[in-house]
Length: 427
Length: 111
Image: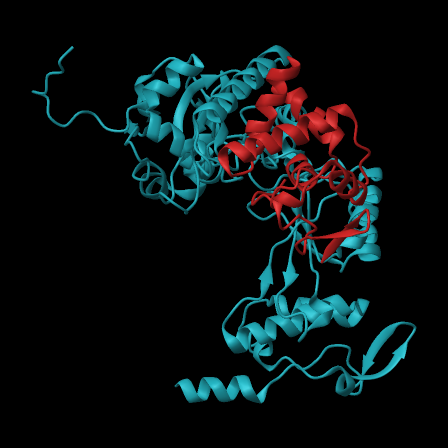
């Protein structure tokens, strides 16, 4: 096996410049075979599956805009696949007044692929609910193609628009133009990160609060902290309008704000009838009633009855019967904290911190922001370096955390009842 | 790499940080500040001196939050304001720029 491995590596060296280049037309390098890109047999394999491939996308883009940087990236990636190792390293690139927002990527094999020397990423903040107009997006693309590689990845888990591929030299000028056009950089490093909100009431009837408005106001309050990372580690807010949680707040944010309701699910009896007529009673039983996680739905004399006290707001019945059922009228948010993905202690889901909180008026939103600031301050004082807030709460204890930030304990915070009923505490 | 001050050259690393802390003097600091396009004022010196003292005591550069807290306490302002104040003085990141001028090694964090 080892021999085969070595021969593959040996047979394919990145071509020396003299072989590759035939002419330098208007500062652009064109190769002998008429193509802009070098041969990348390993990467080509990734195009063979039935699924869309990023390699195809990169190739099309590079052949179209002829940016040497993209060719360098393809060459380096090809080399990575041959040698089964990555060759990017970090560094430091910032723009004036900002400590975060640009993710650096320097090549470790710049002698082999000089064109891939620098390939930094701009993290650009998304609009609340990801609502853009085409003018903004076109402007963004134009600026990026002018200064950077033109390569854009929209809305990964960080929420940011990732503009990938720029040199340090052009960073400030590019940022100035983006900023002029109304864009701002997102968060990176150990600090408050970019927030995300679901499409909210603008596009979705299930939204229990104005995710866009709350996102915007929280962003305004924390914008300085996003640009100047100086916390223990990262901290993310995410805003979902209901517990369908379209922005993955509970799993992937430290402070998840999820829409919920306090009263009963609204039932439109006529629509329920119409639904049963169309889809059949079997469907109601098999697809709605038996799938309720807490068995809170039953049939009484052929009519659907919901035991709202036992409803856990899973949204399943509402999703299946969107016309017949909708969230209750008394709406607000639940705040869950401590969600995170792997690293150190492994994946954690957010824990319920505030079961119900109203964020309709400016004053209520202001109160929420004050609480959030208090929580971040607490984490600042008590957290260790490189510790997410969920880990800090787990280490210090939920009781301690609640006392320190002035929140009340609630029965919803109990993850499991005590399993030995004969246990007697000392106090 | 080296940096030239008063016809003497001092060794710096690839990011422009002094290799030997003992090489530091006010003149060297001024030269390093010039590279960062910073004109040193008393406010700048306060922070540079704080970093130097901290480094001498703990043999490590302070975390940014420690620096921010210290500035907030010293100037009797909120932490939020202290952070903005620091970036005003050192626009490309207080830890990185101020540490460079103070002759400390490059901090491991991002700012």
